[in-house]
Amino acid sequence: MIEHGTCGHVLAKSSGAGTTGTMDTGPGYATTKAAVCSLMECLYGQLRDSGADIQATVVAHPDNAHRPLREEGRLVAVFPQGAKGSVKPKSDRYRLQRFGRGGFVETTMRAGVPILPIVLMGTEDTTPTLLNLELGGTRMPLTLNTVLFGPILGAVAHFPAKIRAQVLPPVVFEESPEQPMYLRSLLMDRAEGIRGDMQETLDAMYDVRESRGIGKTRPAFRTTDARCSGN
Image (cartoon, rainbow, N blue to C red; front, side, top):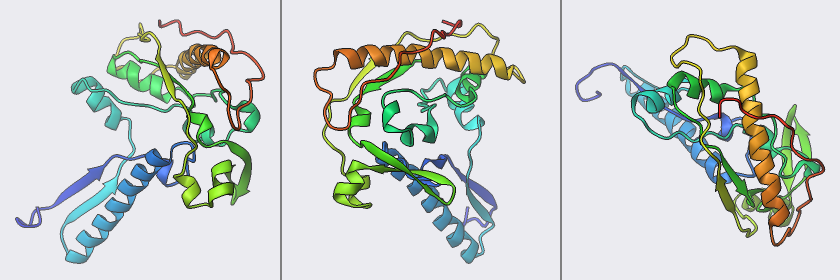
């Protein structure tokens, strides 16, 4: 575009994981997202200084997920706990937090594709959270890794752990795709049903694990009875 003197727009897909706070439970993921944002900011400045009529931005929009799902038939990974998963107290270890307001359910409903829940056991053992700190109104987890290795090395130095995954049956929704709007209560009910099924599986995996290791505490309560009626 620069060579031909044409205008244009360079778009990149990222998330807030690397910009609004550190995800100590997923430093690799957060690092890649922060890298995308940093790269696009540098590209924006270089294009601006060169006088090129080209913009560079990072866009977060449901269309970024709808296109690969509906039109391209590709897989899209979603972490519905969001930042809440990295700042929950030690007593809530291996307790799945609320899955937002059901945005991931709405995206899959609109695209007309199923959800394939995947439950991971062991990831929370790599960065045990000791407590949460309030910094400028933002909750930041203080991990054992940070205490032992410092804030920089502690963000990337994980304790060894066995990580196991269990794939649950696909969740297929009966609602018609491509609807302009879905009831928020419906989306939240479906999301809670999926969370309940995943928590039940996580509890079962926890009960049969061979070792509970550093920083592990047994879940204080069992899962709810919520289920996804779209199964």
